[in-house]
Image (spheres, rainbow, N blue to C red):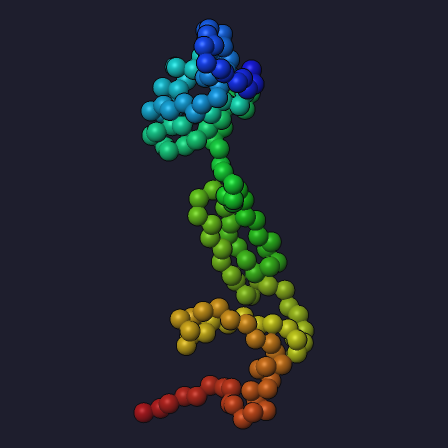
Length: 150
């Protein structure tokens, strides 16, 4: 790439300057990759283009056109089989599943945190500790299964 050039009033733009400076400092718009490839015979590293058919911003990396992913996009999610999580992706919408039976076993301590869905709060995810659950029992709250027979 030729770099950056400051133009002043009256400067002449010859073909070499046009190809070296002006074409490389704009984002070219094409209907699709085929149109881009037929119009750009010698791409330079750092050139950008926009493909209208896929709404994709691309740049030339010196050997090929690559899609510009953009800041903040997730490029990979990988889960460990012993975590109880499964799923993941390298593109698109990420999905994760929780399978508690696959999680490793452990000894519960009073300061351990337990996650639960609060049905009184639109199933919002909340947390509590084992100690808080134990305190429910000492406060007279019964935790158990109630069957109603008719």
